[in-house]
Amino acid sequence: MRRHCITLVVALLSAAAVGQTGPPAKPKAGRSSPVTVDVKRQQKALDDAIAAVRKEFRGCVIREIAREDDRFEIGGKMANGKAFEAQISEDGAIEYWRRQIDPAKLPRQIVRAIMARLPEAKPIAVWEASEAEEEEEEEDLYVVELKVGKARMTAEVGYSAEEDEVFGSIAGPVRVRNLPRAVAAAAKKHLKVAEIGSDGEGRMVQKVIELEEDEPGQDTSYRWELERPARQYSVTADGKVVLVEQEMAEADLPKTVRQAVRKAYAKAKLVEIRKVTRNGAVSYRMEATFGYEGIEIRVTPDGKVSEELY
Image (cartoon, rainbow, N blue to C red; front, side):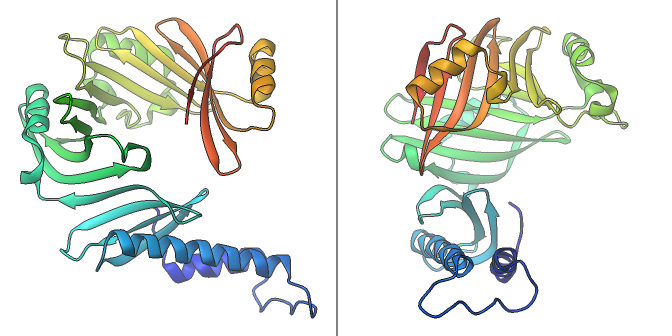
């Protein structure tokens, strides 16, 4: 979370809106300045976010507030002294939160799943998490920070009591020189020296272990992200590139795909577009907004809208 003092956030909002270091000009009688209205709206949104956090974490002490796009990120200490973090929309709704808990409270099914893949792993910190869209589902979500030898990894996992199933993944950075030979060969093919870094550590390379994959050797992959253009690669331990995601502009979409999207969602604002190639199959995924409502659109190369996730 980006750390900003609450007073700094308010000051920056006011200064940015007014566009000057001195006091704002007094609006004409009987009219409200657009600047004043915007500052008041931003202040109300911040007040609503703080109120939502105080209601969710009664007795908490707020230590950090940051603005990230159209939401607030707030963190601090709960009444029991343990940490919490939350993401709140501009209308005061909590979209995501996580709170630190005692490692002993981690479900034993999750502990077994992690230890089966990483017997040497030791939990450093455990967080219980919740997402707005998951509230009606009987699933418990956790973020577990692990120490694996000298390395650090993070498990983002969940447990469904109804299905008695553990899902999620464990991920952590791997130095390029420690990659399996086949993976290193794939990395050298796709990565430039400048992007790897002069120290050769390749901090963008992540080892990922999928907890839902039972087939031996198929649960581990290696992923890295590059810039200009933004893209992500996922490679199996035997060096096979199984996933490539590349960001693109709407103007660069194939004509058939662009027309299909605009016909189905003429008023949608496309905020992110990715070309996804999974095991050779291509699709286009777009995150779009309708006012305050978000949607993910998936389109095949022939222009068929294959799936919508709200």
